[in-house]
Length: 363
Ligand SMILES: NC(=O)c1ccc[n+]([C@@H]2O[C@H](COP(=O)([O-])OP(=O)(O)OC[C@H]3O[C@@H](n4cnc5c(N)ncnc54)[C@H](OP(=O)(O)O)[C@@H]3O)[C@@H](O)[C@H]2O)c1
Image (tube, rainbow, N blue to C red):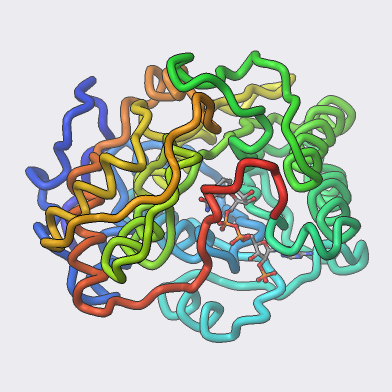
């Protein structure tokens, strides 16, 4: 097994991943998954305090598989026997098999079905990843159902537990780019049905946490990125194919998915009643144009652009969480280098664009 990675506790925001045993380039999915599921030392310490099992609901999506395997590797490194149980519908059997091959137990469950929820294993520690975003325009009721009914059912089932629940930066409106990004206490007044259903998800957690005595850390994530999907992958695809990079939404936040998952699991220590809220991303705001140029430099391609930057963007300020857990160690230069190389060698894509360029809330 590889050594544990940095948790970003140095206080530095520099790009320090490559100096700590991370590769210069990533060339296979096996290597990518190994990097994404590498526990940092402080995560191993957190996991040592967790009672078995750790249950992860909504584990069949883009983040859940590597998060579940990361949790299992951290449990193994801690020397404790902790079962990690991944719960999802697992419409994709390949994902379920991959998770199981890495020592994680799985339970197939439609969380909208109360009988199935009742049969889930009991736990005092749960990570909540369930969400529905894309397809909202065609079917808003499904988005509202998944994002509001499921949290209520899960909080009722897991009354008295600790829950790290994923929310999204989409709960905020667009803000001026020189504002430093929305902070956790800002009003939640976004555009569009998905974003408002995500506000609904938060409010249900807030209500149920109090009603059922659940301790919750709510994490508003702004774009996890890895090599198979994410904002940097979207930009790299456009640049590599010679397509124009849209600039209207000219600024964004993101975080390497391995760092996000380490922080999500460590946030078990931040669960409180009433719930606490944290923005989750790297501390910097990134320019689409600059990241396209960084990726273009790696690919030896001059990026082409369309439109021009607006004065506002969907931006978050993650200072509070970075002060608590330390800044995420993987910097944008590393992410851009890895992603550009991955695209240039025809590395697999999930074909799930982020649509980070959407400004009217229509997903
Ligand atoms: N990835 C990001 O960059 C990002 C950014 C901001 C916020 N977030 C938040 O972080 C969370 C995890 O992100 P993600 O990218 O992994 O999301 P995702 O790809 O949409 O995965 C969520 C998973 O939840 C499961 N799910 C949905 N309805 C369910 C149901 N009725 N019963 C059981 N499982 C159900 C689905 O897996 P099955 O098909 O297996 O059921 C789905 O793939 C989401 O809640 C999202 O809002 C993510």
